[in-house]
Length: 194
View 1 (cartoon, one colour):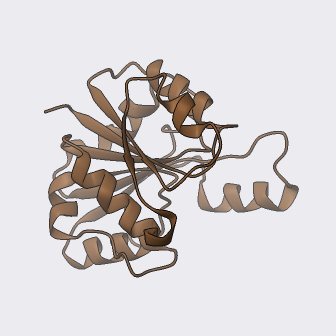
View 2 (tube, one colour):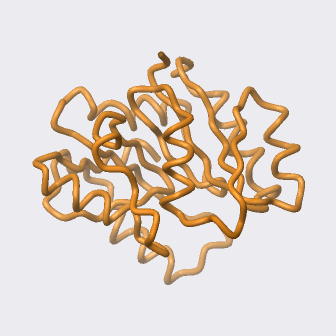
């Protein structure tokens, strides 16, 4: 069993997937597997991803929900920790995975999410949102369920008890975090996992 499995949901991400996968390959943590959950891409996403050591699973567009795609990827994963990344994000530093996984040393942590920030094309208002929801200060056991599956990790044994709700059209990450907190698990924010 690998230390962590990365589950990446994608649909027509040919502009971004190479940058994300290249960033993953440069990580200092190498005990990992990568699972691509493609929901019917019609561009070169799957072709580009196939150049990397990935496992590709597919979901038909008509069967897609965020939760269903995540559950499919989590079922295909073998790691104790499942890292979830959106195909259009990428790590800024080579120790992104190590930093994201660090809070799991505490057994009560069910989910860790990392910092996000925009780039040169991000609008001013979006930068303000990032600054509010992804501050520089860590929160190892936050009281609210906010998190974001674009850059997060979950404990596999908790997911086995609490699969993602496949009926939701969005906010499946907040729903999952809220249900985990109700069972006494903690949510951690790790800004160093950027």
